[in-house]
Image (cartoon, rainbow, N blue to C red):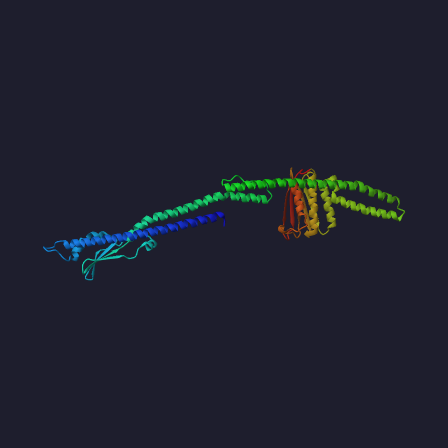
Length: 435
């Protein structure tokens, strides 16, 4: 669950709590108001009845004062209560109940749940007028409940509306505040993929602004470190290749000439058995020197260029591995790539063929070398071997060394592999990169 959703859920819970507490408070106030209003109205009605009864007793119907007013006379005196809709007045005379006033049967304009929680208990106020006459006043709180609901529902609706609007507003605002987090995650993904030039803009929130500042400092340090490592790797490769070139030249010029001289001397002494032995040893030494020369520095690379050196490398490899056939396809101008690019491509192809022979169990290898544009060259090596899982690449394949060599020349290195589907290696290098 995202932080945005969690914050909105927390805010929603807060507003629901406020709404519940507000509803409880409204119900409590409404219940108290209904009860007080009902008691007050019923008490006032009872007092009016007592006054009306006393006036009825004092009214002269004949020359003498009437001591016990009749029902009709009391009803006439209480006509004013007939308009009170929420009161029921009963006159009980010798056990006989007569309704002097009844409330109008009107529907309460309030929800049932509100009526149930607000409506007070039944209330009957009784007052004895004389020894055999009693008045009962029953209060009906329907009007008070309706009035309380009319006062309460706008407040409840307002709280609910504020909760909905505020929750939506918070959702939008929090989403806007957290939007920079997506930029931070994207920049971190770029760093993970090797894009150390990724930078974060200045954010409005101070906290995220501090994160952006520290992230940019970290990215700058990583970028400088990568550039330094790339420079060191490039210089290391250049020095290594220079040493190999010098060593190969010395082996060819010095040791090769000495072996040739030994062979010449041995040829002049062919009559003796020792001469044959010297010739055999010289041939063995010459073969060793040629092998060392090929490993140290391919002579054809310096003399005839990259394509001829690759062809010679692949032809020799095909001769040594008759069960696997390697095909080479070239396209475009490849004679001006630069010494570092030439030797790097040669070493990558050499390493790939070694890996195929050791691990791939393939039947075919395809090598494509293409001039993509005036400033880039692409090498693709594919085999139909057993492959491997990129996350669990076997050790000893030399992938790390190839990647470092290519990245030192500011090139790109990608590998696609899956069990049972072989391996495809793609590299791109800028033309003329390196010394």
